[in-house]
Length: 202
Image 1: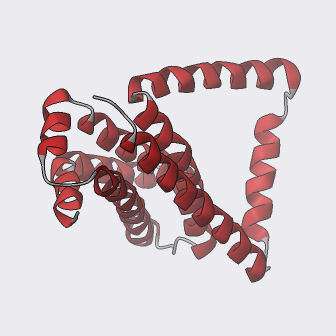
Image 2 (image 1 turned 30 degrees about the vertical axis):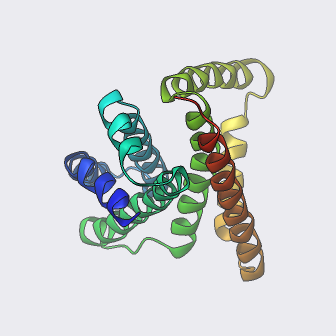
């Protein structure tokens, strides 16, 4: 399984370098490290998923002596590594460019949101394909715009207030509980993806 992880890291090497450089540019432009980290982590993850869906790579992976469980598990491990790379880049870049430390609460929130997003995306992609996820995302964004414009016009303000409230909490036990829930969701998604991929007919 280590070779599968290394394969993903090698395939994404150039993309990672470009995205991490772009991330530093966004930090230099005074963009929010939290939201930039979330967007870049999900973008890297989606690129890794779409790369595996190319027929040549897909056939090669399934012809190698790895179980489907190992193939799925390596992907979930790689997603965590990608997210941690982005978090580390933001932490170092924020300190060098702005002279500020990226708060540990911000890092936890960023990693948590990305892990929740990946937990929802990966089973969908294993069941269908990433291009269907793109369609679903576009539909979801359209629904979001309708809600913001016609139903809950201050939704963006409410989201910002919620994020601010989470970041201002001092209750360590609550952070631990939220972290435990996110990890449980991630593991549940992992097991679901293994089941989906194991039963998939190619």
